[in-house]
Amino acid sequence: QYGGQQEEMAESFASLGMALLLALLLVYMVMAGQFESLLYPFCIMFSIPVSAIGVVLSLLITGREFSVPAFIGLILMSGIVVNNAIVLVDYINTLKKRGLARDDAIIQAGPVRLRPILMTALATLFGLLPLAIGIGKGAEAQAPMATVVIGGLLVSTFLTLIIVPVVYTLFDDLGRKIISRFRRAGDDASIQA
Image 1 (tube, rainbow, N blue to C red):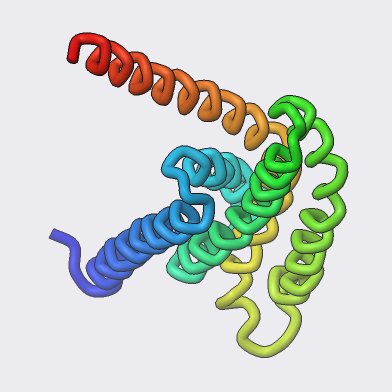
Image 2: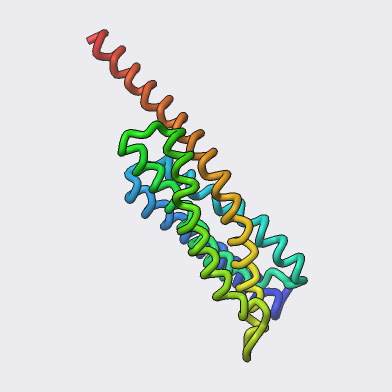
């Protein structure tokens, strides 16, 4: 049985894992209320697993370990990544409400929302760069947090622009199929009545 620092580290990871799950659940609930849909928030949440590629790569490249500050950085990065996907999906929905077809809305939303997404990502990246390099007193302890955020955000910013529209299309088709089934079931029930 492990004790001492190993035991404290395991307890910290368990607590932070619960905090991450709770954060993702709360983010999903807020987005479900904002979009008035249960499917569109799933599209947005798909940008979070993509960012794990950048997290792992950044830690491997820098030779840093996945520690408690890195876990905190993972939670922080999840919020920023979700924000970028929200900007894209919200604009796609806005264009659809204006009368554009779904595919045309997706094609137009990408280039229009690219600049705000890049501005958000680059501001965060450049703001965390001194911390990731380890400049300043006590920065060595927080460097894994900044490394995780920078790596995850770099990868997810570019992959979000590809994956979120694809997942949006898949979930939109799924939503249409479900609605058409309910309508057919309702029509069949009214015909039998």
